[in-house]
Image (cartoon, rainbow, N blue to C red; front, top):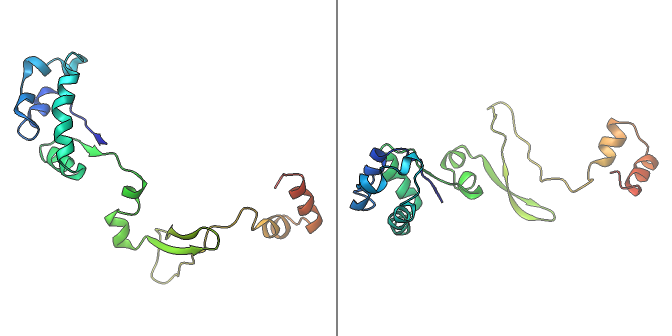
Length: 153
């Protein structure tokens, strides 16, 4: 998906040489930006074929090159796995999870040269119950068992 923020006829006109010359028709599209949807189907019929002929990054680059605030709608992979900034910083590492297999984990962004980073796989449900409820909160093993049996933890 492409997020298209084109707010006036002049902006649409700047795309006409890329999409199709018919976009440069103020009589057809001049009222479009004032809420008229009379020619919305015509506009869509012109834009969609162009969108299918080009990759989304190319469409966005061309629109932004013409001063239009367009962007593609990013999915999780775009934002995380394929993000060049995160790759360059080494912000993602693959780790083996005992049940789920290999997963990508974020490395904390506030890394310092003198301080190491310790990454652990995501815990299992209830894995730290004894540590938290027993060690931190002082409950006995019997108390923790009763809470688990009652479905509280």
